[in-house]
Length: 322
Image (cartoon, rainbow, N blue to C red; front, top):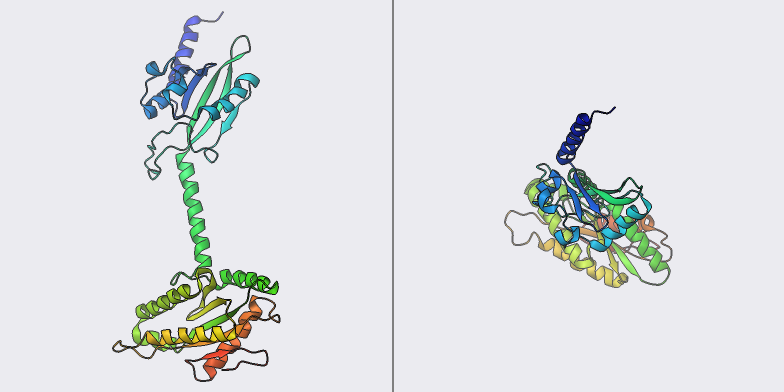
């Protein structure tokens, strides 16, 4: 025969556990009136179990998404099956303030929610239990990881000093342009700019001023062609895609750019001459991909440097011409 005193003690221990467990517990009847409200819910909502008892959940929390919650809860009542929602689907059910010291950057508590049926002696699910899990640490950690990965990808695709695209990120831009040009949708020219004797310049001015010159050139290229159409290809070499510019227009643009680079050193005391050599290659049907186009432009750049530097050279199929 069962000792009723032991049963009462068991119930007391069970209620003590339910009240102090570190998850939110609330029991709702078929009218969505609160029948149980544990200490977790009290601590984060400021509503005592005595005040919550018998109150309608939606009247207590008008901001709670009633339609959504009913759609989640009704199958639990009718089919007696569990359901759950994770924070990635809906950040929270109750907008509780975040009280975690480690993840204090979050304004609210991220929550996973489970809803389970509670059957009566007649095997009817007349009540449901809603369980609220505080997963703020997990959510914020995952968000931090995602942001870190985005930063790493940005570092791979962009030059850290100038903010321009890297060569690896720029090649697909050129390939896309070539595909459109092959369909007759656009035309243009490619330009490579290489600073003359930049190592010597860096040694005389110092790396800080040398970096400042590179950043100013990068900003000028962005203003000229747009963020996606220019890149730092390494060291003091830059690439620029000039859309809708034929050979004559591209050479004119290159010369204007070359004079702008030379002007960086004028009027500044103790600054050696600053100059750049530029190679230009206009797209033609013979150019099959980005690597080929860059190779043609590089030949023009090499010709400009071999011809005395501080000048522009245009690539032609028979060879570069100044």
